[in-house]
Image (cartoon, rainbow, N blue to C red; front, side, top):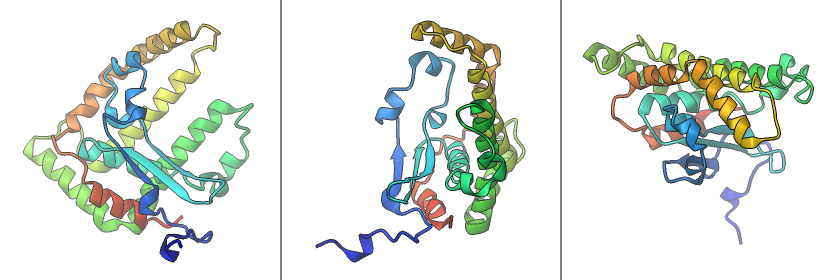
Length: 223
């Protein structure tokens, strides 16, 4: 007999702990990340992450990489913006993902950027304010360079994500997969990704994300 508390309520609009996947460098998704892209200096925290509504079960699922504190939280907040966004954003609804793929992808990323932050502030203001204080303290101590506050860092991460999508979308599709990957790496390098990644690392403080706090943030959001 199953525990009634574990039975899914179709009206439920929160992410349950069992639907949160915490990845690390040993996770399959990270190990399978293309080597040539990793060689660009691609931060492990940006190699995987998701937030979506399972259309079959109706449950919302979340995944992120356990890595540097501020970068992991930036990814988490962004991914919190994705669930149900198609139902809420008329601009996204108006785009055909098949014939307007590039515009569709960018619209979803920009929407998640804003929606994720708004949701986090609305439902977990204490956690977000503490993140902001911790970031500012690290700036004052000299541990973080190049950014003045957490929101600025968050926006930079999202802008980088859009740049990556735009750059990849501009690479013509060809049948030779190896050549396709080579052209993609060339385009990403020319777009300045290694420098952007290096700049992101200036916000590393040598402290991993607290998965307990991350779970509190994720499970507090009402969709």
